[in-house]
Image (cartoon, rainbow, N blue to C red):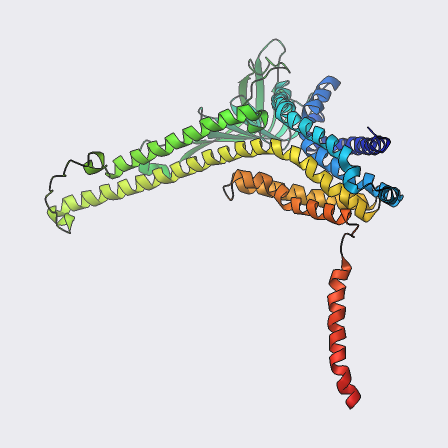
Length: 487
């Protein structure tokens, strides 16, 4: 490696490391702010808080890494151009591409590391992070109930307006939704002015004592026509005691892993395997539903389609008005049955359509997660080929103008990327286009900036705009000036 390559690589690495650490610290503070309600005021020891932050750190890398490459490239090449080091290199016959060669190799290695990180470390950390959040919420019964939001505790969803007391066991403004079945439907709602959590270390039963409240319970009538009236039972109480079994919640281990299956927790091979299963499941459900609805409607495959050599038997011709074959009473029964069948089929089609859309949305999310692992590797290349030429063009280093350009470019990249992913998940475009749209849009910018920096052109060629305008005015003045002289 030549002295110039060592100098450029050292300068870029120092800048890149400094920028990466600063940005990483900023995004960690943002993570703490987002989850402050889960950490503050819950008597968590330092080890649990550190684990929480460690498991949340890897998810920040896809945001920090491309931005760090972009900002470090602009600052490094901006400093070189500002201090006339580029002018010295060009006078010695060293082009911009030659100066970028060693850094291109470094960015290539960094892209491979980024892909490996996104494929292995981030899914593992996401898996740990989700499970760790669940276990923190279950570590203590009082800690599992946060103020101002519904909290899932056993078979109850509990919301309190305010917690007080030494251990947060005094509750004010209590609202409880009781799950009546395995589907999570809320059939009973309890509201109380205040309450108290009473627990015993030797017992797995948490006693919740409620004072001055009401309860509302939905009633499902046996007759279908009575269900539209939505009947319910209402009652009042002075004191009401609810016993919550915490035998499962108290068996908490912060290393326990009980949640899996989200697309962010899977690597490339697992995503491909899952996508294959999801696509097969969707195809089978479509075929099954189409056959089922055809049988219900009465459509059957023609025998000639199954056996072309077999001729269909001639059927007796029916009159145009089929109802004329029945009596008036039979007509009413037939119309009622037809209306009921149409309503039932429409409901079945709408519910199945919603279910199929949800399954397709799940497939799109998994495809997006698959493509994102490759996008982060390409984003490092893209940001370097935008930042390096841009720094050489603007000829400004430091933390002033480079930060402005870096933030504007990265916000554009991140906005397009987020918009594309959301649109693809809802079926507005293919997941491939949604994931790669930001890269496709900004790639021409990288090519343009590299071309202009190589040819020593400015960021914007004002001569290309002002010269045609000045020539136009000159032609107009020459055209009218002879007429004025003759007068």
